[in-house]
Every structure is written in C-alpha cells, then in structure tokens.
Length: 109
Image (cartoon, rainbow, N blue to C red):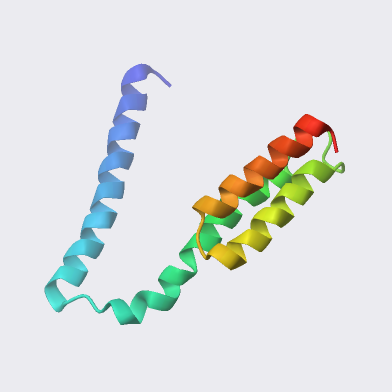
C-alpha cells in the first residue's frame, strides 16, 4: 500500500467516524435529549472500557506461551476488578492495578 492510498484511507475513516458521531448529535438535538433514558447504559460504559483494555493484555501475553499465565498479571487484574466495583470508574482502578503490577514486578512476588 503506497503512501497516498494510506492517507486516503485515514481521511475516509476519519470522515466516517465524524459522520457517525454527528448523526447522533443531530438525532438527539432535534427531539430533546432525555438523559434519564440512557443513564443505565452510560453506567455500564466504564466497566466495558476497563474490560476491553485489560483482558486482552492478560489473556494474550506472548505468542509463544499461550498456555502460561503470569501470576503477577492475574493478581493485578483481580485488584483492578475489585477496585472497579468500589470506584465505579476507570481511572483509579487502572492506576492502582498498574501500581500493583509494578510493585509485584519490582519485588518479584
């Protein structure tokens, strides 16, 4: 794929993404946005993002060692999952999960 085709692909994807977002803004802008209807869905967004960020890194660690799981990563993921129930967000659980991971790596637990 040459450079021009790659740039055209990036531009097309950017315009498509912008059009999708704009369509939702226009859709809700006309009829009045009712936040109460979407409250439950928005509450599930943070755990979904957390799972999408963390599960592939735990399950697919290396290509050559598919059967081996790192205890350090499993413990850090468990800490992150438990903290996500408490904080109901993404930032603090991810931060504390990474701190747990780094501390366990540093001390070789």
